[in-house]
Length: 154
Image 1 (cartoon, rainbow, N blue to C red):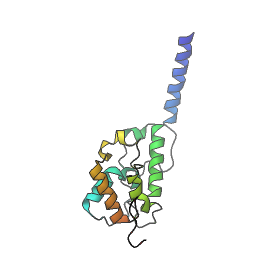
Image 2: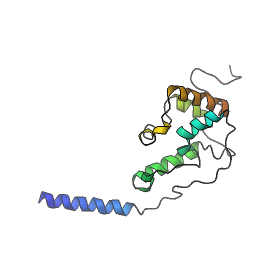
Image 3: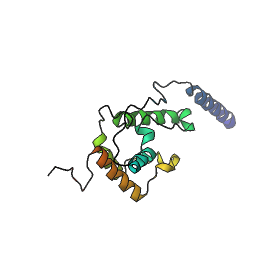
Image 4: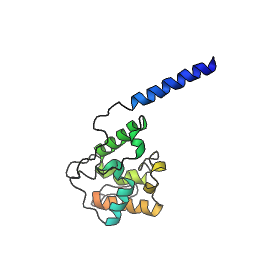
């Protein structure tokens, strides 16, 4: 009796998994054209930003294979759309809500997201690279990090 119940449960979950693959997501997996990028302070800053930030904070997202498999795809698409909404290096001609917080979020270890790193080892920065990215973001975008104040402020 227990085996029959488990078979029905497994079959039901399998059917559900197949059905959710057909649920469309509005604006899913798009890469709109790049409109404008920041005037990077150096090619190294841009390269570090591309490695650690661009998948969620640009229109140049590299969509991995698992971004095609629900329900994981829902999380990936949601995080990417939310990231672009907060800061999008490909739409620098538009206001960027949280641009001045970019360096601080990297310094605080909030970015890149911990959940992102296991499947994107290239985004894992050494301490030296992290410090370079932080300083490059400050030089390019502005903002401040703990222990530093913006130029011209007391």
